[in-house]
Amino acid sequence: MSITIRGLAATVNYVVGPFVILVGAAAGIAATVLTWVLESAGFLMLFLPSLLAIGAGVFILWSVQRSGLRIDAHGFSWCGPIRPAQSLRWEQVHQLRPPPSGSPRTVVIAQLHDGRRVEVRAIWDSPTSSLLIPVDHSRAQNALLSAHQEWLAARR
Image (tube, rainbow, N blue to C red):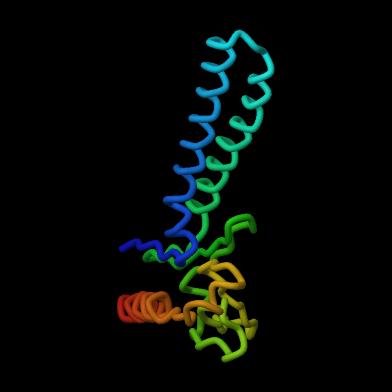
């Protein structure tokens, strides 16, 4: 069993990334064709922004691909679009608790056997997304809880 859960922003960016790449490619082709047809090198200045757009689209896709919550039989890992990945193994986790009401980006609080508490901010959404749509991490919370319960049952 291995699942990956992503937020709404990541889902939207799966469309935005290729669109930005497409716009960059179209601008590059237009710059090349205009330079060739009109025999004016001035249109080549459009080529640099087109390369930047292609790079931005690739970066968007890369950041979406790495962000999210991944749950498997050994534990779970989470990563934002730019932050380094973090992970916990099921052996380390004593209990998974719901987040406090004042933290809309936190999915769960993992209480470890050594007494530490780890805040799992697995599903990245923009700060303003919670203003438009209420934040609901119940799918990720339920997936984490059921995977932890399966691991506990298999251990007994």
